[in-house]
Image (cartoon, rainbow, N blue to C red; front, side):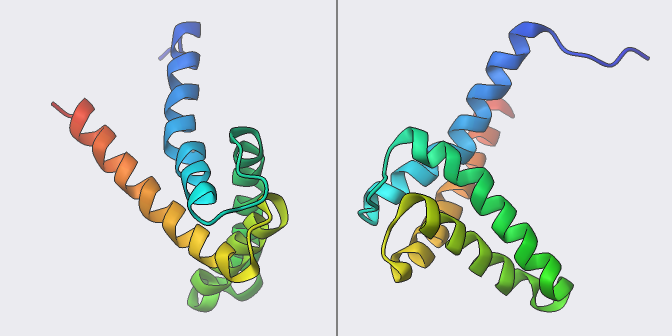
Amino acid sequence: MQIGFHTQSAGIITAIVFVVMVLPVYIAAKFFNAERATIGWSALAVPVASAGAWLGYQLLGPFFGFLTGFIGMAVGFWLVLKPSFGGAFGLSLFAFVLQIAVIQLLLKFFAA
């Protein structure tokens, strides 16, 4: 069995990751008037918020991990994108909803 992908696929995969992860964060940052609401800062905020969510989840485990993961993600967005502290929680929730919506649209488009 040969595992690999063509170099043309790397561009497509990068575009899909951008549309699913970064673009919703950028839109949410604009919506919540973050100081650093640009594509570049949004691209940096995604791995920082993901690391914060992972650390939050690891802190309390599976029972309260969802809540602490959400708090860790909001703090990551707050540190990088600079919305208000309360706005960071709204940004996190709004970005999550947008990401789910984008995934649903992509599944409808590619599942045909």
